[in-house]
Length: 289
Image (cartoon, rainbow, N blue to C red; front, top):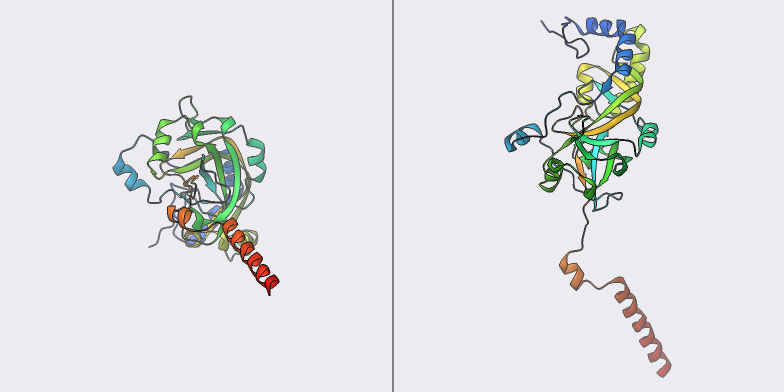
């Protein structure tokens, strides 16, 4: 006999999906209240103290080092959160969720490790962290999906990083994930139910399901929570593994022309000068006829 489990009720087993859905429906208000009252971060906070074997086992994704138009070589760009991805809390963050808080908390938010709000855990101080929200695709971040996301990014000068472990990870290109400490402001419930009393939840499910990069997982469990607004709460962290794993370290990297291009390819000014000389030569030939 199939057994249905839910993260929201870890001690319970349900014999049918309908039974699970009923329990979610009956506890909807309490679950929403709890989500808003709780400060969220990553599920499992792994220490930055690590061995090479642990790193190989914990994270498969490489750091993204592509040159985006907003990136500068003297900066690093930890992706602290991404939108439109079902995370391990069963939450999907909606587009625009960070717009208000990113502006309000800019210059007030620490970059630290492992959500440890203690002196000594800092990666960069508040004054050096520029919070930006950038629209891109998941493919830009190393995930095989052309769907759009918004990345919450802590743009930080490399020279401002005060944590040696993070410096080492950046220099050695060791994959690092990130996580944001946050408090939910607006939360919707989505459920793939055909029951009449679930029409509102079904409408939310239909609205968001095709925007989710890992929608197969969302379809399999047939319900999720949609967060349309959240507050950044003090910090974002570097972690070994976050509740949202599409959170790489982007590194500003200059794209220099190759040596051959520099020495062999005539510049645009050279082409213009040669064209001008040809015109003058032709005019002189015509004048002598």
